Length: 403
Image 1: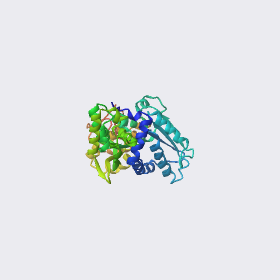
Image 2 (image 1 turned 45 degrees about the vertical axis):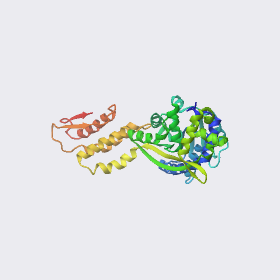
Image 3 (image 1 turned 180 degrees about the vertical axis):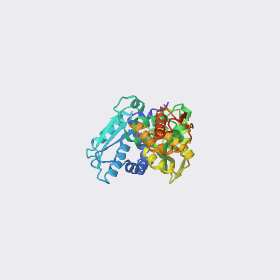
Image 4 (image 1 turned 90 degrees about the vertical axis):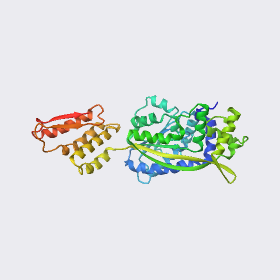
């Protein structure tokens, strides 16, 4: 019976994947997406000389996509004088020993412009789950990417781990994933028939990422593209490439010879129904998306944007906006100094909001939405109290926090 562990099966998977890439032109299409998203990301980072830029690749395979990502980063840096001063560190994670060996061989003879001694690699031959449990030295990554690999992990747990443990404050997660099309339809059919799974439900993985991002308040951008796969040889039982391609489409090693003959014919008929004929050849649709995920609110955005918004509102609207923005700040994960950053913002924005004319014996009532452990609330109250102490109002007014 077919196995969902086909992606970890070694050289046979690599051969079938290579045939798929040849028949689909996927490498060039992925490179187009990488060229689309990496340069703006590097420009946003505002990198300075001697800074290190860290990249985490999850499901790195043979390193082909990783090297292209690094090439685009390097070329973007070289448009300024940063190209020869910024160091790049790339950590790659993949459970497939054969793929990791190919990766190691590739970095022995790096192409230009990666061969200047400024790019370092660490290859971890392990699953992402094993990596999460390993005790490596903490490191903040500017880019974390899953290039056609997020199907093999629990999506929500993986993304949460990356935001909490791997990503720098202004870092971004980049995913390239398949959407509904020939491959997703075939894999979905086999999941139902053979009662095994590739990992996540491959055909709705982008929709899941969108839902998870919205749930956690992350910013998400999605770019879609479509192209075709030539599957003509799949229908020739004597074609070596056809059988390798069939293995890849079904994610099953030696599918034609190991599965029940009737089921093989049923699957081939299913594939044929999903194709169109052009020039005597059969083509299937390939749909995929580039997904870029980042924190929705950065401290810089808060500082610049909130001032213009807060001071244009009535007092009641100012209070409402301020508390919602504070809630958003509580969702951010900084590697260090988060408390101080929040306190600086409170010191900046709270004093102007405290009414200057309050009748004696009146209470100030405060509603904290998303109060967490109360740390931010206490800072909030302290700033208000200090503002009141500047006059004689502190003795006659009670602060009544409500959670």
